[in-house]
Length: 519
Ligand code: HC9
Image 1: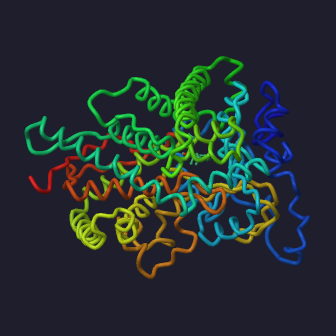
Image 2: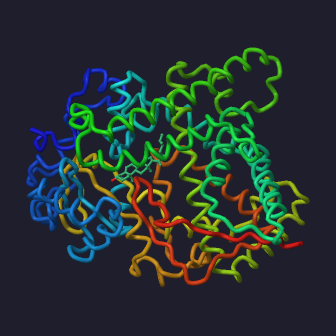
Image 3: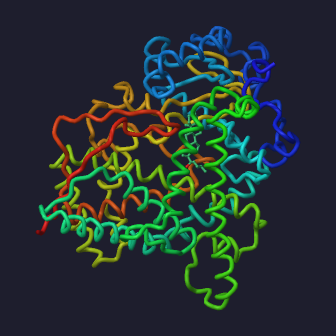
């Protein structure tokens, strides 16, 4: 029954609601990955010679045994390395079935191109089962993250205008810049306190607060003061809830959440509790901003943040605005903070590159006379540095799409509605696609090496990360201020690896030393 349903989430509560809110298309489609026989080809592929789907290499015949083996070998925290091993064992394409999770994995940028070029008007990625299960359980609407079809497209186009369009994103610059400056002030305070002329610490929590402070300023136009001495316990609990939410999602990727819910498993209960807090806390902000908006209707020239803009536009029902803003608030904490941690880790090991970046930033500042919008236009090496961080340390281990038609990948026919995942972690570390992949070398993004379907860390096309511009600007501005003020150092010889915790994160704390450049 489960195996036949494939990836479909087993009926929870009221399945019809699930379909209307989160999936507009045929509810069976998600599970039909492998049921279409490999010999009915669409006209575009007629006459092409390729091998049938059922000949794909990989472990896909014994799904539950696979899951057991995966679990025994601690594959859960190691998804990214298991993928690299599988590509070594099976070649550039393999098919796999882990419990309910059936996929085809690819690594070659050419194959990624084939996949994305046929993604169509309503691209679909893998829907995280427990995230949908929670919304169904609590009767909460989905935002763009979990929606599909026309309803997704409508929300997404409205959201793009507020979060991705160059017509609005310049408004984020002062909002994100002040948070970056406050982070620097906070670091100086810590250095003074320590009385050693430097500060050594694991900055995870500070970066979480920085990221939440940043995303809230852009969404609501509100400062929380998380970089000050007193930290609002609710904000801290929100940050912790996001970590718990991600952490409890992992196990439920392969074991249906409905099953865990029926046996009252701790994973499911913790997951619900975490989402409850996330939604309740986001709701407070939204309510407050909504009230403030009504009070200040007259001063409309001033940028009021993404939420304010959405409310003014009146193009989305309040419930959908809430769902989407909550998703952006929750999605903007661990993602940018971890990427910044990795960036500082890599730069700490590359002092010469730090100097190069400082020179670039200094020149840009001088030419722009301090106008940050202009500065951001003239720091190509810094932007390449963030790209390079995401190549070696992507937040998401894969980018996935359901095929919309039958396609050929590595000379195999792949039927429509198959879940195909591009292993971007594996791709980023493969010498066939990046010369000397082990080297942290931002310049590779600026020179003549091919970039064709290689920079996929924010996904691709209309379904790519909706927070991309916020994240990029936030990280660029943060790094500008940090590099202008501090030397970033770390203990030599400490190599930090990666763990899969739904996101890819450092496998041990990273200790950094920040030393003022102008003591
Ligand atoms: C996790 O095999 C591994 O900011 C799975 C495939 C998969 C699907 C969707 C990905 C997810 C992975 C990692 C986390 C991602 C998610 C889509 C969006 C989410 C990239 C690779 C971001 C971190 C979002 C989360 C927003 C949410 C908290 C509201």
